[in-house]
Image 1: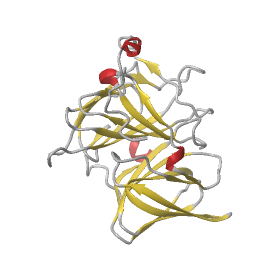
Image 2: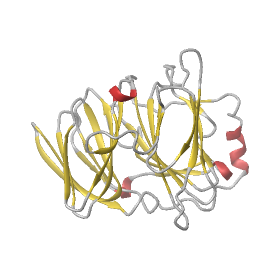
Image 3: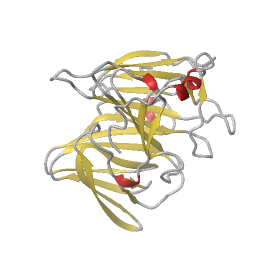
Amino acid sequence: MTYHLPAGKALGGPYIVDVTPEKAGWGHSSLRVLELPPGGTHSFEAGDSEWIVVPLAGGCTVAATDDFGQETFELRGRRDVFSGVSDFAYVPRDARATVTSAAGGRFALTGARCTRRLPARYGPASEVPVELRGTGNCSRQVNNFGAAGVFECDKLIAVEVITPGGNWSSFPPHKHDEHRPGEESVLEEIYYFEFAGHGGIPGLGYQRVSPSGPGRDTDVLAEVRDGDVVLIPDGWHGPSMATPGHHMYYLNVMAGPEAERAWLICDHPDHAWVRDTWPDQPVDPRLPLYT
């Protein structure tokens, strides 16, 4: 199994990224990235999955239609992932969705297989909690638009992380590949990356995933660039390292078989002590990039 998919290696149909449970070899998490030209439109069937449509660059209209009627949402979006939080739209399972963009843009479709049908809804940017996590060179910004406890879904968890150039995030390394009630949940995870360029030079970073035990042998050390994807079925993941001078963005999509929708993690025992140093350091003054 190839866990690092460089840009262009996860193409599928109209999508520049098309990760399905079948392609990933797991049971729940999906990610599609759609690019539309000015005036472009695209329709898709939700099927047995729930979806959140979130603009990465540009704005769009999302229309969700099912046996209960049609809901249409105007998403203002944003210039790019480094300029602001975006609004978003929730598309329930068994619906048909149409995404239309007058000016064109790039849009993420984050998905998870689910059983409950929830209503189609609009998520305003003003209600997305922006969290500063870690301190010092472990400082990062988390946009919790689709986090458990923030926005209701059946199975889907989705957040955005921005790591200033030179910092490490997803650190200490952590995992969520065992069912331990109240302590750890089983979640398949997708990382999708974008980087801020500097002086016309594209950015890059590095992603590490290491085996967490017998039968959980995912092992990745990848140089990641714009549009790259890393699949994490199991294992300790982190750090995610941003090279100096280039802010790093990644979109996390998670889902799993647990009855409770919860992000419960276990830190790597060799590195968990790093958290104890955070109260003695300031948060990186470059954060938040925006609120």
